[in-house]
Length: 113
Length: 110
Image (cartoon, rainbow over all chains, first blue to last red; front, side, top):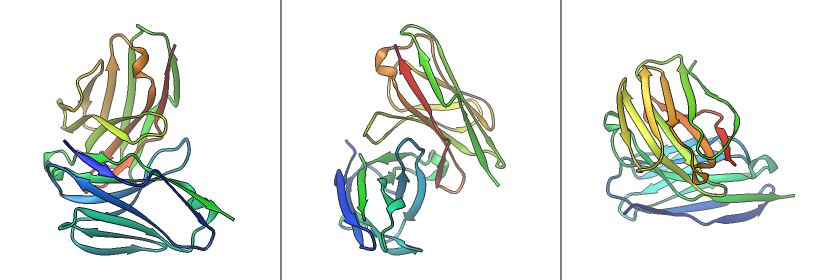
């Protein structure tokens, strides 16, 4: 079967740095994505890694190690508005084959003042 | 720019009634289209995806079906809703491999 593991919840204070880990066991792998979802809203795309290494986009960075089946999302200079659920997702096949994603169960991040 | 429209935003339906949720995408051609369901406090479960008109792949056998009558239109249907069909239904599109989601439909079954 397919599985993605990520912590269910994380708490941090404003201005701090937080890392959300994701380990996966899947039948295929074309990349690891991260999505943010605020309560009651739709998921929005944050970051994507197809190759090993670090991708940086503003305050958010994402890392992938394919040999370890592991990735993480790093959020710096936390703000109250970063309180949300964060999902990792594995692309199981190529875009032309459908671009299927399988999602983790999500990590609820609470940012405290 | 590309936009995705999904409606209605909320829906309350009795058990045994039919369902039709519609999703349309603007500003792009031949996107991959997806239907997901999300239970409260859970991750997204892929229900159906489509790589082209009339091409539907089903991921989970269940009480639902999907159709893609036009390039940028994706419809989720049921002939008879069950209580277990309650949830947050999300449509998404993809062109460059990144999926973009509509605002979702919150479906409650009574």
